[in-house]
Length: 502
Image (cartoon, rainbow, N blue to C red; front, side, top):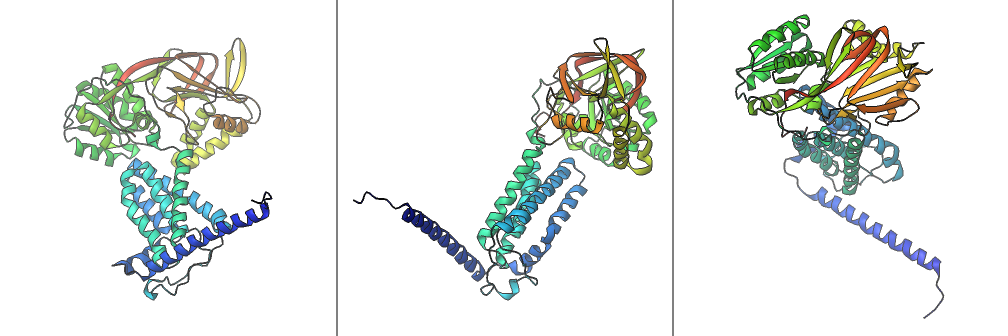
């Protein structure tokens, strides 16, 4: 045995073995391509080339997303948005890394029948398949949010991927690599923006509530200005004996009081402000509340787990309900209630500007205008007294229940009856935009230079400047002097399907 060992020879041998394995894989890939080219695919000649062409530049998937959004179901809209986000990430990875890292030539078209070939052949490199990546990304992203929609799209996505081999523009390994990259992009998006199913709600003891198989005894008051007529009609279709009262925004309070006098269950359809008014009436009359989301903001219904009329109808038919917390605020001689959040500082100012301009330029532009106005302000909108010292603040936020952050998604509540107030403060200083962005990035951190947070059961603020605006559940009022917030544990009974994961 020769004791001397030539490392150079070993290195060359390893490289040769690696090249040999790669050559075998490429040879197998080529044989599979030729086998697919020589095989008759019944009925595919008219379908697959057209399907492949329709997926150019993501047109097929953007059209599908638009059709899903038109269904007007919250889960379908979320699934469509997630699918498009996944497709965007996959396309970015393909165009910046994938196509440039492996410069593989396209297959030779000689074995592919002319009737299958595309009229315009792609000129980019072959590995990996961008069409397959987009198809897998969109279908996987949709499926992670809505398995039913994902199952419907899976055959279409598979056919798009198969069409790339069928038309001769990709080897099978190109398609497999693209599909894997697309699916990976969808899971990356889910990690950054968790699905509703990932936000697990803590199980709570079932509350006593009447089961109304056909809705008899349920009176639903709806704010017709929130554009919820279709949802209310759909609820009546599922619960035919439901009584519906439509009214103008300024009449909601009076109609809720009248409805409570004759109802077994008080129902409401509208945004968070309308739901807030209904909750006050339900508490006064000791009635369970049925919430159908409508309007612009529906944070309470979504955190509760009621997305549409099907969820609510199922819960009412079965008598499925839970008890949730409310918060009472007292300031001077007035008091009120909120179910979601209360805030002082820049946010109420933003709401005021948004409400002033929304009917002229639309809700989102008005919100952007409000944000620009408050961030450019040269004064702190809020001062509170802490231990005898007045301190400037940009924002004081109080949540009914602890808000949790997952990934880049906005904070959500997983428990609506935890007995806690989630108090967050953005400290005052110069450069408000920088402070507020830093606080938003900090999320649930309890300590940062710009942001502090604490969870308590009761909160008392003193030294509030007279006329300070305060926003709660989308409404704005003014406060002064002292503000006391007190948690009302499990004060309200609300219908919610108990077996839903969403």
